[in-house]
Amino acid sequence: MDVTKQIWIPVTFTVTPMIGGVIGGIFVRKNIKVWYETLNLPSWRPPNYMFAPVWTTLYIVMGYASFMVYQSGGGFFGSAKLSLALYASQLVLNWAWSPLFFEFHQLKWSFIEICGLWLNVFGCIVAFYEINKIASFIMIPYLGWLTLATSLTYYIYKNNPEKTSD
Image (cartoon, rainbow, N blue to C red; front, side, top):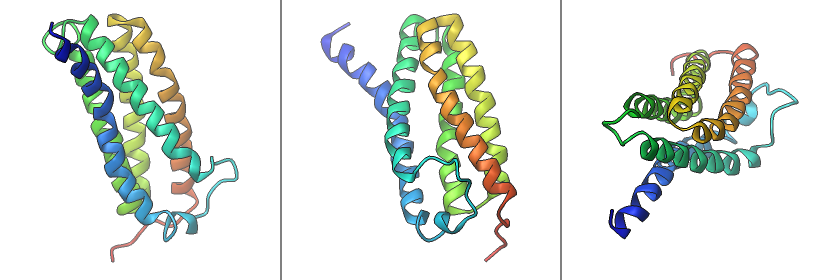
């Protein structure tokens, strides 16, 4: 493998998850003050300034974990294909949550969606374990943070009125 591929393949895997994070951040910034801060929020929620650095770190780590699985499992067509398909689907679910919650204010559907995301990430961790145990282990903090996000989404869904059509 030439040096260019040795550098760009892991960089691409590591940066790709942040693409959806940046796009999702647009929805968050647009709605944080005018909508989110007006909701009934739990006292145990993390401060708003923590979300961007935590998600950025998690996106980098999960991207690198996916690269480790890609490399250990023989690429997209090797033994890692199911693991990488699960990973790709959890990324899509992850990226879909921000517009669903922050832009469309769909509290119930945001909660249902994040529960599906949680299950998908759990499945991804299990599938990664079969290919690369370290990659699996470094996905666990993501599942932990996602558990907090799921709890927060549930609290907001149960303690705020659902948006009606505009």
